[in-house]
Length: 378
Image 1 (spheres, rainbow, N blue to C red):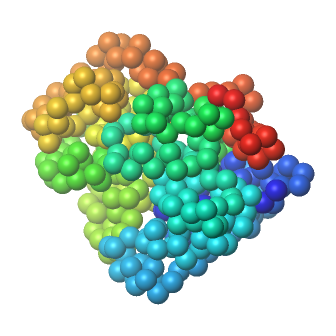
Image 2: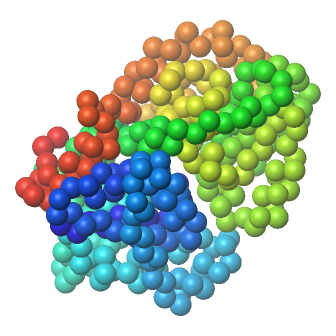
C-alpha cells in the first residue's frame, strides 16, 4: 500500500499528520511519502520524527509550474495551493491513498475526474470545528473523513458531507504529537504573574487584531497584574518579511512577549503554560481547553453570535465588545471560571474524542481499514 500525506499549506500541518504518517510507516507492506509546499515544512517533520525516535520520513517537494512559482515569488500572494495541486495531480493520483488536513485537497477529486481518479482521498481536519467557513462543503469531495470529535461529525453531517462507510471520529492526533516533543521552556517572564495568551485569528471581519492590537498592548503596558504572550494564528505573519516580524518582536517588554511565528506558536507551548486564553475565532482555544481554564473572547466587530452554533466557543467565557472592558474582564476571569467550567468540559467532550489506544494509532488503523475493506463503520 502506498500512502501520500499532502502538506499543501504552512508548517503547522506537520503537527497534525506527521505522527499518523510515522505510525503507518511501521506497518508491514505500507509505504509512506509526504509531499510539502512550504519550504519550512521538512524541518518541522524532522523535529517530530526525532521526538518519536524515528528516522526521517521521505519528504518530496511538490512540483510547481511557472504559474505557481510566479504566485509564490512575492510571499504576500500565498502558496498557490490550487496551482500546485494541478501540477502534481498525476503523481499524487498514482498512490492508493492521499491524506490531507486541508479541504483544498479535495480539489484533486475535481481535477482528476473519472480519467485519473485512482487514489482514495482522506480529509483529517487541522482543527476542530468553530467559526463558519465557506469551503466547509468541500469536505464532501473526499472519500473518507476522519474527524476529531462529535462536533465535527454533526457539522459535516448537516452539510451533507458524510458518505456511508466514509466517516469516523478518531480523535485529535496533534495533542499526542506535541506531548511527544517533551520540551521544557525556561521562564518567559522575570515576574511571576498569571499569563494571558492572546491568540487572534487573521479572518478580517472576525479578527480582533486590526482594530484592537494597539489599545490592547497599551492597556497591558499600564498594568502589573498579568504577563502577556501575543501569539496570533500562524497565518497572520506567514506572508510577512522577517524585517516586519523583527519589528513586532522588538516591541516585547519584560511583561509582554510578542511572537509572530516561532515554533512555539505551532507546538502548543503557549497553550500549555497560559493561565487565561484571550482571542476571537481561532480553533486553538480547543487545544487550550483540553485542560479547562478561563477564557475571554473579543468581538470588536459586534458580530451577532448568540444562538449561532458556529460561535459555540464564545459561550465558554466572557465576550468583550468594548476595548475599555478588556482589563475588567481579565481581572474577573478566574473568579467567574466556575460558572463556565461545566460548559467547557462538555465542549471538549464533544470536540476531542480520546480513544483508548490514542488518536494517532486509531487514525492510522482506520486508514488501513478503509484501504482493505473500502469502508469504515462510524
